[in-house]
Amino acid sequence: MTRTLHPPLTPPRQLTSALREHGLAVLDAAAMRELLPASPTELDALRPSWGDLPPDNYLRDGGHYRRRRHSCFIVDEAAVRLVAHRAHWQPLEYNALHGGLERWFEPIEARLIEAPAWTALLRLLVAQASALKGAQPWFVEAHQFRIDTTDGIGRPTPEGAHRDGVDFVAVTLIDRVGIKGGETRVFEADGPAGQRFTMVEPWTTLLLDDARVIHESTPIQPLAADGGGYRDTLVITLRAGAFQGPPGMA
Image 1 (cartoon, rainbow, N blue to C red):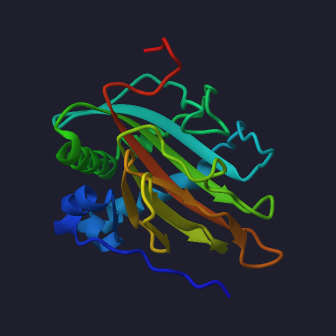
Image 2 (image 1 turned 180 degrees about the vertical axis):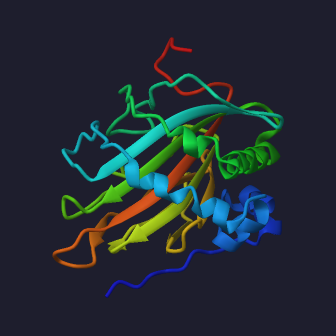
């Protein structure tokens, strides 16, 4: 039986200092509710959207275990602006499996983006990024993921341990049902230290300074031999200056 390691939780009042000192912080659901001007009911109203994600048709490992949606925003202290739908793109330097490929995913549904809790979440993340890097407009990409066990195994990070090529990353667990595995691993990019733990409670959120750490999640498997399972996450990245795109593309 695999031992589940609990996340090293960060008290909300220590969030900024933890990110400055370690390059990572983990908030549990209670901390997220404390920091967000949103009720538990408002947050949980976002979760059904993960039940209607289209397949990811770009997986280069031949798998069929990932569903996702993707949308982009520009956010500053005053406003959250949804931008015209665009491809998700990463250089090979940051994604050896899917780098260099323009991946066009279906956008996140309007009913999710228009929810007050969604706007509150983006503003919270922007506030933390600005506390670390300075106040400025942030170029935000949001990804809804469902990793399932259709193939017997699901890979949350098929590219392996990686950085995203941005400034700030937030990974929020939305749900996990009928699975084992899915351990989160975070390591110093230029040092020996690391953390490993499993996010189990919905709304547990991992915050990362992308320049300082690399991260990955281990594969998932179904708990029952004849049953399915899945792991839902929301990944939000913040980048200063511009969105990532192919060379020469604005």
